[in-house]
Image (cartoon, rainbow, N blue to C red):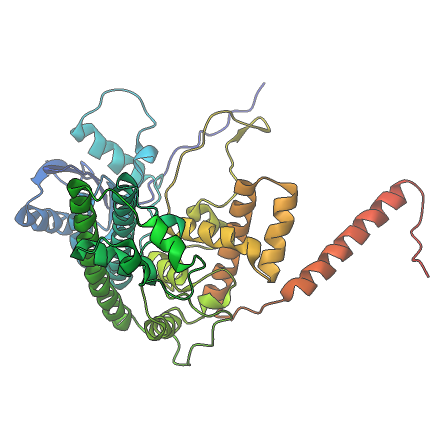
Length: 445
């Protein structure tokens, strides 16, 4: 006779919790029916109602609050509850939509409360308020840089429609030569030889070739589009300066983890959008805030380090291990497996700005004369480019986790160390194969 086993039931992990269904005009909040006669209540998104919501939860001695990450509508309520001392869990909507059936706001908030009470929901990672403020400025700046690239594309389109082949003789349309010629064209100059005299000495094409590229039809509608795109580009340049000032102020407001001067970078900083003095100042501020020099890692420049500092901050205690950190970045190997075999279908897409920055840094490792560069080139030899970039980004993520959690500086091993390690690995592989065949390797004299 089979032995009767006691059924395992879900236990209550958070007895004093609440579930909130976020909306654009109203929020529905559910608590334990034993705590209040009206366990489900509706609140509008006006500020006075949000404070009344927080007062109601405090009167019930609620400690944990779970809410769905719906657009940006959750941000005001999250900030109010976090300031009141609640432990707020920002939950992915995929984790709360696994049960089919009726769908309503009332049922949603009750389902979120029930899942949270049993500890079945995990909150998303969100850095501290000071880091979030800097993150907003950095994201705003990235959007302005993207808009500038669109302005350059609009200028290129206008030139092409006028058959002005300036992009065929200059590498950067908004470089020293290209910008000077464009501004003179907008000012009214049409003589190709006069425009070609603005050529910088570093341009490979000679003055005659530059003049040949500047013969166009100069139609009024295309000149108008060119002038507006250039004016928009200059306006965005002023906004980038304001963004840089806001980022500097946000970095100053963060606590300082290191008072030592930042070490010299292994390669000079590029002069894109910032002067050398501004980049050195930003490098020193990032080193003071993060406690370590992320720019010491090859292929990680000042912009990548700024994105990482704004997206993750210096405190990684939320991630117990490197695996948890890499999984949050979307760089860990997938576990969509059943029966020992990977399941078909596409994996859920995750967009992570820190992960995108690490992937970009990994793609630059192909030309890096460093240990990471040698590792990346070895991966490219045995796998496709996308997998190699993801693997190298995973390697960079592990290095960053170790540096931030242990406070250790990065030590470059060099290509020679990688070649020695690769040679030793190949030798051990040959010895294993020879042992299986009953042979022995003998070193040549």
